[in-house]
Image (tube, rainbow, N blue to C red; front, side, top):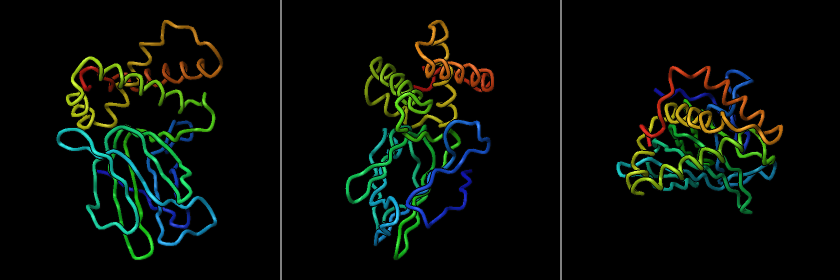
Amino acid sequence: MTVFQPINEQLGYCFHPPADPHDLGHPQLDVVIRSTPTGEHFDPESFTCLIATTSGSNKLSVVHPWTQDTTYRICAGEIAIEDARSAQVRAFTFGGTLQIDSAARHTVCRLASPAPLLEHARQALSLEELLIEEVLILFAQRRVVQNDDVFESRLAAADPLQLYHACLGALQAKLEHFPPSDDAHRRFKQFLQSARSTFAAEMIDLADLL
């Protein structure tokens, strides 16, 4: 059962802090799309993500007002929040649940996940950015060894937390014999080693999911 945290409707968007400040990523993302922009902060005009279907995934772009379904299962992939000037806030998810509530003055999107939501950072070598980059490489490698439709179907069906743990395990195994090339990659390798020790009992082989 997905548990959504209360939102702050005064902001355009909000990444909720993790329960442990040392954890990577966020458990929930809120986006408020207003009929009239405030002009006081980033004012979202659309929220775009991939929704899981029985055969794979489809792109969903939420705008205001919203008259379609209010609950969706989200599959792993990129998230984009865009304003009227085409400025974007971007993130990556391993999957989760999207709840949409639309009223006269605004539409609220709440995406919650048991796996970390990773915000794209301005620093190219942040832990979040390195993890997103490496996970996308893993996805590309799994895609090329099978039919595209099969891969998309398996990705859409994957449990978010299992997928996250499987990616961490695959990356730790991939990098354990390679010395880090700089401080950022040293911290990334330490993160993977720590995560592996924490989640070892819960990790499954990525090939069993994708």
